[in-house]
Image (cartoon, rainbow, N blue to C red; front, top):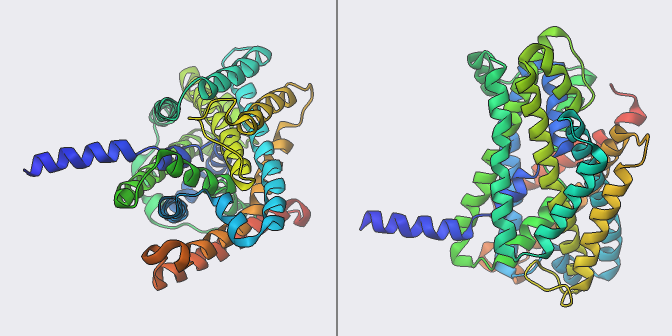
Amino acid sequence: MGLSKLKRNLAVFLAVAGPGIITAAVDNDAGGITTYSIAGAHFGFSTLWLLAPIGILLIITQEMGARLGIVTGKGLSDLIRENFGVRLTVALMAGLFLTNWANAVAEFAGIAAASQLLGMNAFIAVPLSGAIVWALVVKSNYKTVEKAFLIAIVFYVAYAIAAVMAQPDWGHALQQTIVPTLAFTPGYLLALVAIIGATVAPWMQFYVQASVVEKGIRVKEMVYARIDVVAGSIVTILVMFFIIVTCATVLHPRGITIDSAWDAAQALAPFAGEHASALFAFGLLAASLFAAAILPLATAFTVCESFGWESGVNKKFEEAPQFYGLFAFLIASSALIVLVPGLPLMTVMYLSQALNGVFLPVILVLLLLLINKKALMGRHVNGPYYNAFVWLVAAAVSVMSVVLVLQPILGIM
């Protein structure tokens, strides 16, 4: 009887799983990988202690988004329009569209850089990647797209293998993960802020909610959706751990500073071997391609929901022309921009992270206001202690996001 129940629960979980795992995993995109690589190269293992708090933060924000979508059956932008008015919605959508567009450009920049590191021509790899993403989404239904995304997560194992090849001191790495190490220098503090800022992005809240609605997850299945969110957060934290450990082991002791993930991949070759370097570059390529599919999809979901247009991968092109039109525009324009000769890729990447920092506090506050409305959530509103903790976290993340955005103005290095 116990085994039968276990099998039944596992079957339900496998049917529900996807939105939380995919949304959190995409967090390890080109910008995220660059941030973790720089942290490891510049500060060694000393930023590893932040991974546990970040995992908790990620679980909290994603759980609220999934719960809001499951209980209401509506996407976040839909609820913002209905509860806060059209003017705020239009302003938010304009800002989020620009933010996600900059993020999508950064992902294609990651594809271009990684493909060159792997000996491929960027002028072939970038358009080909865009075509693959377009075909996958337009020619498939939601189940097929979700399965493809879940399979794509497997490629993150490249970072685990690269870390093993780097031959780190695992005991020291685990100790630094458990015991906080603080250095009150501007560079170190900025690295902590950047790591946190790379973890929770505005688009994630919209995508996880749209996904649970698209998948039709019911309230009685909410416990499985929560497990899905936790599993996704664990995958994300493990990838972050392996990236930081690799760069901390190989680059930090030699005083090698880097500015990007592709710098890290190149710098690994002389010390960890060509295979480790190739694995690091392959991980960047897979992660960027993965995110280049999700970000335009999340943007199309968000904008279409806010204006009441039909959206969803299960819809045909003629049923949701705005949805597919926005998706196509974001992919095509992002790929073309990246191929412009002399494009300052690091500036593009910083712009995408800065825009995330501008809008994240706004989205977190709106999410908290919505999830505490009893008319919407009934008995599924946040509890008082949970609510106090989440407001505190939202305030802290907001401050950190502002610091990250103001960094160039303040001249913090």
